[in-house]
Each structure stands twice: as structure tokens, then as C-alpha cells.
Length: 266
Image 1: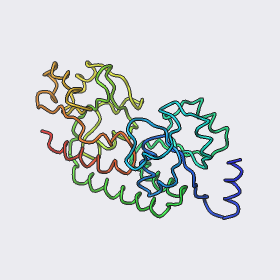
Image 2: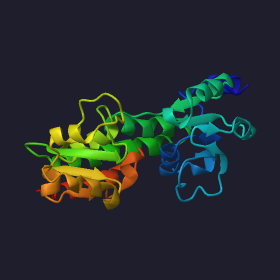
Image 3: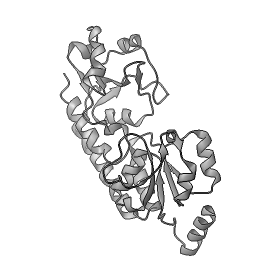
Image 4: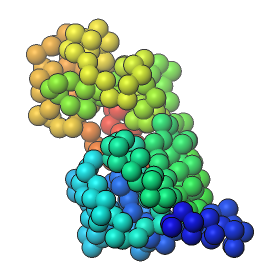
């Protein structure tokens, strides 16, 4: 039914897209983008995963990460689902597709794709002009940071996602491009997985000059290896803004804080 109504809307209005009025977000980053677009009144449901963005406390829950309550979702009668591939299981994604509800899947692998996503979602939720504005502001802001923090030799950085077991970011990962904007390089950019597991020996071999992690406590174990340049120079740093891990417009401000931190590296 939803799919048929959506197609009819396109035909009658002769528009590229019919603006969705009842949106369910299945990823925190998508919920943030709805807020950034000024379209939060169209959000009728969210999938909870950690703390909700301010302003969405009243929105109905449709479950938690990788556990969508399908009956709760369908009861909301959504005409658009926004999701990140890992926010639901593959089986649930196929189930949702079977209901005929339009789905927008966002997985930006770089900052350019993220900027385009603002315009694409804006088009779908009746905020096309705002989406294009965010796209341009994001592109311009990242270009300014790239020019300001450019280095002749990029700073080698190890980005620690989790200390035990040890996880990092691989290549084709949007956080890696944020590092590049700041004049740095991910020392594991050659790995294809988005979040590969590595070992201490591999990190020692890559000789990062900075190690980033979630908190000082999560980074303390590296002091056992004083041969690492990052340890010798006292450059074991907690992330100044974990918004780097939520790809929405706020990633621009998070990247600016990261650049300021890495700009002080010796």
C-alpha cells in the first residue's frame, strides 16, 4: 500500500520526489540530519541506540540497535525509512523492504558523499533548499579546514576505536578522510574493512606519532610501549568530540576540533 501511494504521489504532482510526512529514523546520524534540516516534526519514530539527540525525547521508539520492533514501526504508518546499513540486520532489512515502504540507506564513505546526503534527504522530506544549503556549507567548511591544516608530510595517526580487543578504522572510512582534512593520515588506511581488529605489534610497526581514543583511560595501556613515537612525545589524546563517529552536519564542528588538536602535535 505504502509503495503504491508513493508512486501515485509522484505521478500526480509531477515532482522528482514526494515529500515524506511520516519518517522513521533507524540510525542516530539520520535523526541528527532530520534535526539539522529542520524537519524534526516529520519524525514519528526512532530506533534507540545510545543517547537521543536533544529535541527528540518525545518521538516514539521502534526498538533498539539491530532489534527493530516491526509491529511498532508499522503502527506508525511511515512513508519513509532512514537507515544506516548496520543499524538493522540483513534479515530485518529484507523484511522491511517487503512492506513496500520507501527506504533511504545512507553509508557515506567520504565527506563528499555525506554532503550529498544532506541534499538527498532534504529533497525527500520537503526541505530541499535547506538540504542544498547544508551541502554547500559543509563542503566550504571542510575546504577551509583542509587549506588551513595542510602538511607537506601528513601526520601518522592511529585511531583506536576500542582498546581490548584492539579495533581501529580501515580504509574507505569517513573518519579517515576527516583525519586527512586535518593534515594527518590513518596508519591503517591500507586495510579494507571499516573497523578491522589489529594487534599491538602491528601498531608498533606503523609508528604513529599520535594515538587517538575515546578517553585517557582507554589509552593508558600504550604507555607500556615507550618506543612508540606517540608515547615518547606524550601524544596519547582523547577525542575532543565523538561526533566524528556520527556522520551528520555536526561532523564539521567535530572535525574542526580534531584539526585544532592535531595541529598542536610535535
